[in-house]
Amino acid sequence: MVNLLISQLGSLGWGREVGMAALAWLLIPLVAAIAAGLWGIWANRTRKVRSDGPELDGYARFREAMERSTSGT
Image (cartoon, rainbow, N blue to C red; front, side, top):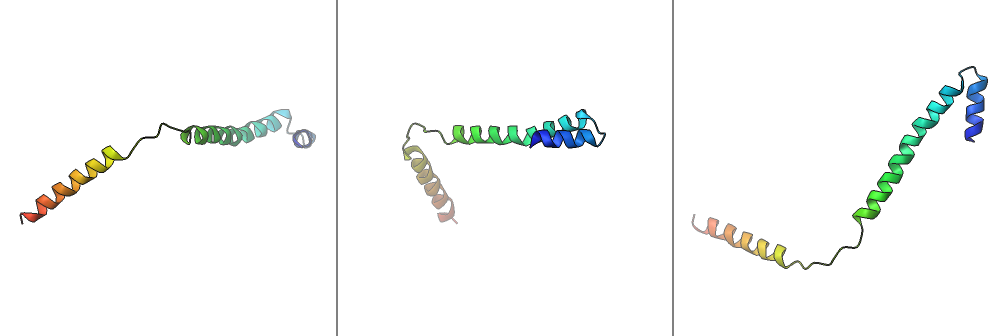
């Protein structure tokens, strides 16, 4: 299919450079899709399981502080 595109562009008098430039522009989304796929695999990798203890403790302290600041008014 790619060879047909290049041969048609060459027969129109545009030259081989235009066909190669079009193929180069088609490579940009292909490389971007591959990079996005690799990033997705890396982002969803299995990580060491961590408990929610520190986050829940911090949230409990936050709630207590907010309750104290409104109870004085």
